Length: 387
Image (tube, rainbow, N blue to C red; front, top):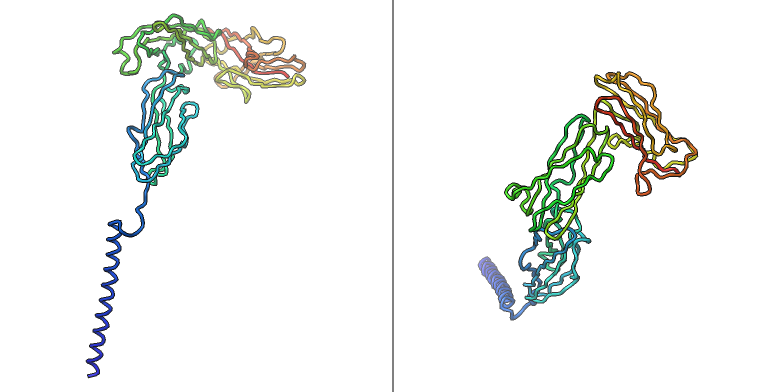
């Protein structure tokens, strides 16, 4: 009998516990339903949402050098909360300009950002950007890209012409193009090699090109001229730097462009030295020195080939002659060549002078002549300033 009462009591307690859990769960369901219908619970969070209207990139196409272009970008707030926008930065402070600094957009409002681009960089291709900071948690930063192509009215197909190492008795030629970017065809009115020491060794041949001959290589160009550059034999040993200046007429407009031409003339005769000597430029670099101290350096002139035993060397001029001195010593046999020491000195007591190669004074030069059948000239340049 006692056992039966225990069973009945246990069942009753279990029933009561189950009813309590059921009531509690139904209460929670009611709360969730009330929140979903808006009759109870906290207010739904109002957040901003960024939408970029249109493209995030603007391509200017072709812009002339040092010209301006304008583009716009648009941002809309599609969120419920206010959208805070602020200027963060640009990739090129000299190129990109905008008056936008800060804005707050309500739901549905749009912001128009006007951007001015100036083609300060040479290009030809450019890719810059502007960034805007936002308080949209899903897109805290917006980047707008600005691209295009920079050119002048005319442009060379190469940035620089480097002929490399060439022999003094070698026929040398190379080709390049001059492109025009206006609707008027290029008319070359003048061409000039402006670096005097090597002017006589250069010549040009110009040929007008048809559109289908260059369009695949430079689709933005409207006209083109094929240029053949020739360099004559007998040029002096060592490095050569020449500048070609071209003047062209395009309709009523006249413009100029320049290109650098580099080469190093080599032969059986070569020149080398220590730390203060640049072989690529054939240049001794004394730098700024005191006039109360002697300064000197010794280079080596090496002669190889079938004429090595017959070649004679002589110094024909020194500039400035009242400041620098140069002597060629006795030869010695070294391997398959002969070495001549070349001593260059600036004795103490020399007057103040600037020959650093700046606007205040050109570099000094020592001219050496040889009896070699093809390598007849060997110039040596000296950079210095006496205080």
